[in-house]
Image 1 (spheres, rainbow, N blue to C red):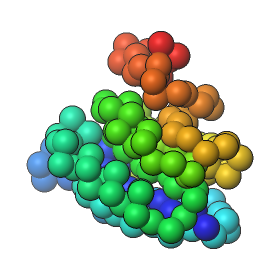
Image 2: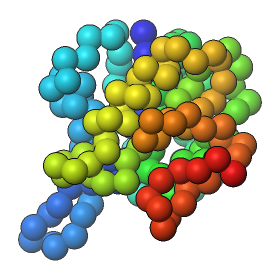
Image 3: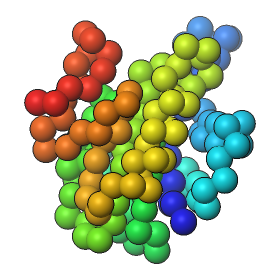
Length: 159
């Protein structure tokens, strides 16, 4: 069983036409998994709907406690990319679990989004990597101790 926690971030942003801006909506994850015929046993739980720049230390503690307290040994966390590294580092003291964080540079609702690929890649990483904490983005696995987001290149890099 893979426990999937969603926290918001770009992956769950939707465009509200009346407001002319993106806001974080309900998680797109169940639809993405169903549309892509994913049958690996999993549970999805939305912890919050926040842009990662708005996450507080208290929010990171909620994420930490949810991951540490779940009965699954394989955990996927969807998260905004701006502070994904900080949250991943906060989770590094949780023993005996494979914890993978992923997100997207474009909302899942957009045609050219990297969300579906990143989710699929992160699901595979969650099933195959040894216990530890990882960031899985755009076909690469990163160690949160050295990973950095390169805003100009719209990707993560090994620091």
